[in-house]
Length: 105
Image 1 (spheres, rainbow, N blue to C red):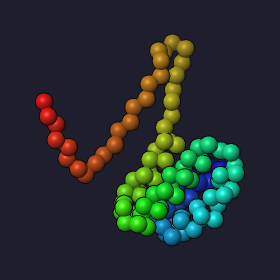
Image 2: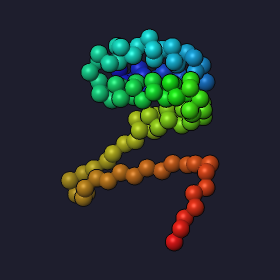
Image 3: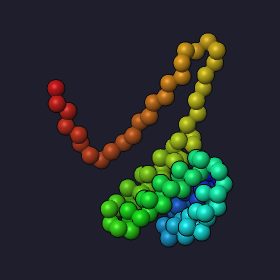
Image 4: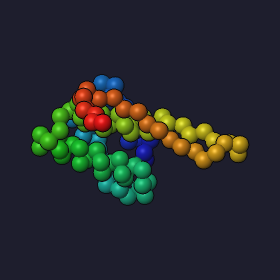
């Protein structure tokens, strides 16, 4: 189920469908996602649904929504590599922002 959800997110992010089409697909399939038992898909569906509500209420803009959706794609594309000779696996992430954050020493 999470693959189908990610597929529809990618379609929207790549301008192959509109925001309204993504929202319609999600609302039409939300109960199926919830009933799937797929925790990852359930979490994604709930987060996206909440973001769409916030977008509708003007609490976030479409660019913010797109950034949130891109995070799901980035998480899917992350590959963890380990071997018996390696120590504990650690992960790191990087993001970009158009905001300047002051640093105080």
